[in-house]
Image (cartoon, rainbow, N blue to C red; front, side, top):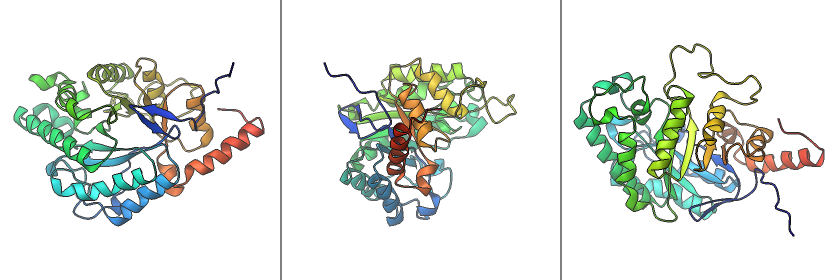
Length: 322
């Protein structure tokens, strides 16, 4: 009988009929220096994503694209609020497909920070419609799926947060916007089009992050990407939650590891993962399904090749995980 080989960082991963060649994901990182002043995709931006795809990453998540012109986090953020953006965004989807690298596009609205509690209901209804229209544009671009940006204190994170969301209307149900968005776009998510969401694992506590993860799982997402949310202001240190002293990686990675214990949906861990041994630790110990390597890819687009060399050297010399 053939013995099943242990899963490692370079083992394929399948999701909704789509195969990732390894367990490494490029997370969404806004490359402002490569974006046009009008929020348009430039040749330089396409080239950067193509370099990452050529480098062999398992999946690319395109940086935050704003669903509304008045919801940008910065003037030259990429837009997707009308059909004129489809042509440029399609170029990125095309180069990813050319190099057999699945890609998702992250959709985003910066929101209103603490003022989310007083935003008129009509305005939130309008933004919900803008998200829905952006979903349809994203599919026309040719990506393999969509990631909803529900982290980092932006709009959906603000609604998920019990610190900031004190509303008394329907949006006072912290998951109403997210559930409604998923429900009203189900028709575009067929057997090989992925719906992911990036959530704050501390919204503001880990227990709240677990609750959000369970709720989006029930709503039907295919992939959960755990990052940071609206932090509890009572925490003064860099780590915004209590983390066991023996945990060897970043506190946001810890959020992902803990949330993974409570959901069956595939989960991505992210933040300050730069070394092969760090990424391998998470995969080989079955702590998460996929690992996001971000800033390290900027300086080393071919991070995968470098990591394979490190992995083989460590295995051949008896090197240990963390």
